[in-house]
Amino acid sequence: METIVTRLNHAFATPALAQLASGCLECVTREFIPGGENGCTEKLRIVRFFEIDDSGFLKIRAGFVPRLTAHLTAVGIDIVVEDRTRWPILEQATNNLPDTNSGSDRGLSQAIVNSPRGRIVADARDHFRLVSLLCLVFAAACVLIVTANREQRDKLLARLTSDSNRPVSTHQDVAWGAFNRVTVITSHFFAGVSRVNNDFDVIVFLGAETVTGDNAYETACQLNNELVYCLVPPSYQPDELIQLRLEAICGPVIHSDVATAPTVQVVMLETPSMLAPGKLSPLERKRATIWHNDQRNDLIADIALAMGNGDIGTLSHRGGFLPEHVDLLTTIPNPGIAILVESAGHGRELLRRLPHWTLNTAIPDDDGALESGTCHRSIVTQAFASHGVFANILVRATGTASPLMVRGFPSMQQRGAIVLFDLADCFDVHAIRDTHERIADYRSRGWPVEAGNSWIAHQEVQENTKRKNGRGARA
Image (tube, rainbow, N blue to C red; front, top):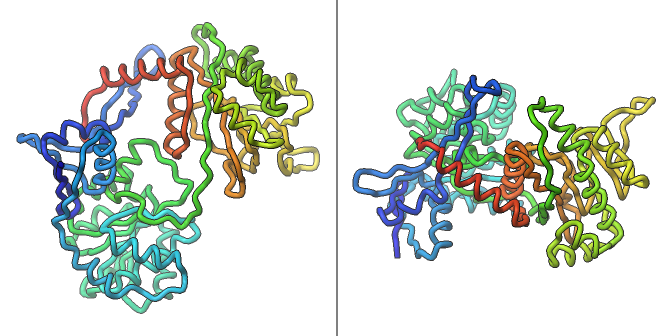
């Protein structure tokens, strides 16, 4: 049995646990420096979110305790968390919870008084209302609210002024003498205002960007006596570095006002091997390896047709599907299928192979109107995807590293299996990197990913290279 001790907003662990922290409290980032053969040189850097003192003891932000506990439990270590902090503001709030008719608001109020820090997931349209609720929960506390910009600050200031009879101000006219004041500032002024005599009991960040930027994060790391909360929209999908920064300061999700999105099963298809061309511009490379790659396009078309027709033989042999994936697809009667492409040119290449499908782009027709939606079997461009794509099965053929941005996928109204097929391109270092980024994006959303043996081998080599070339750095 091992113990993690928390004091205010920091936590400490024994040397035995410190040796295992790197598995969940560090990430690898890429830096691009001008110079080199291609105009810039890429350097890898390991960013560590922990400190180990001369005696070998581990020190972390208390927001990481749930993550570290889960990591250690997964490797078979029993953990006890000993909180040696007394939070008078939380005790006071517990005895004075506001009356509300909303079950969700009652749940949020209870989650807040049970947690000295946490993230609150809610639609951006509800953020102002929830900030007002937070101010009610902490009616006798000094509250600092950090917004992203002036417009958001001014609108929130007006809302809080009308909702409450307590002092509400900006950084320019802080009512320092009031014991229960509310101060609303932009992140630009966070460093200056938050350091004045440690004069705030509660800090609320309105949006993750207000706390994860370099300057704001550096300031937030100095917070010690304050309760800290952050409101984030459900669509927020940060990269690994930003996720760790957010978690360090604000801790885990303690409440969600959003219905749980359906889980998407991701299947990475094995792509045909090919010899990547020599030196090409980025556009020429896309055309040669993605848009006009006949073997790759044939595979996409064959799999799309087989899924639509329930052709298990083709799915098993041409796509290299595992038996459970075939079983999964056969449970979707007459599925809606969409193929996502980056450009209309790539879409036309696939349309030649799928003549009875439709191609949806963001190019207006002669009357200036866009297509109103997608049919049951469609090819859609990335630009059109922002207007809405509704499908049980999405085939992503873009080959890019960007996070998946498809409005309506997955839909909260969908029932049954939802499947995303992607292509595990590994014909050159660029393709391997881009595939790795896409898989990381899927996993950050909580979607299970299945990949073939050849891609797993490439990924292991890449991770080993990162570890070898990375240089340590503190967060």
